Image 1 (cartoon, rainbow, N blue to C red):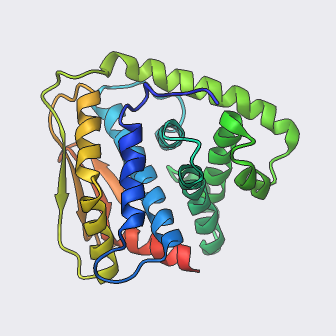
Image 2 (image 1 turned 45 degrees about the vertical axis):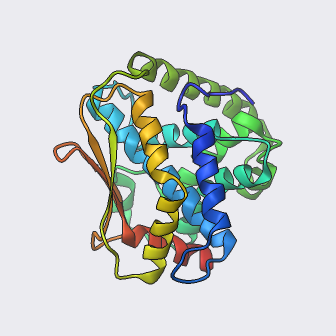
Length: 263
């Protein structure tokens, strides 16, 4: 599989972080390792998705098509950058795709307005992600590729699509790589009333999440500090706020991911 190590440098830190997280269950209660991995994978994917919005905003990057689709692709590419031979790391990448499949299965009946949203439908986000996984390494991700029932003649297209998307994002971000910018990613953790969420976030912090953010901040020339905040939002969501210069990961999203993995 082509390597994209330059896309995000702290790849090994990210997977070391998750390995530590899974080795140390949340202090508030025992955590099923599969659920912990699923939540970690989808939280990381979401972080990279929102960081993609931040990059588009901060660096005034051109986007052809829907921005949500573009940063979905970036998040998947970063997860693929973190790909390794260890089956646990491969499962993390697959779990991020499974998140969209499970969300699609739980979705309520749609009306016509669903087709006008900024985001693709959950099932489309799943198939788009699987296409990149198949394009990167069909054999390594055989389980999720087979589950998607992607036609075999589409895999060749996905290989080409992966190469185009990876090359495009690499070219867009290349001018902004390197140390020297005044900005950093600053973690902020607000209290949660949910023991499960509080336990997960505590384990995330103890496993080196702050170090991961520090390495990302040192890999790109950020013009100012960006807060990465875990907080109650009143909804299952995550978002980039360019005025506040902040990425917010909602506690409700983490709780929803755990529930999704449990069903």
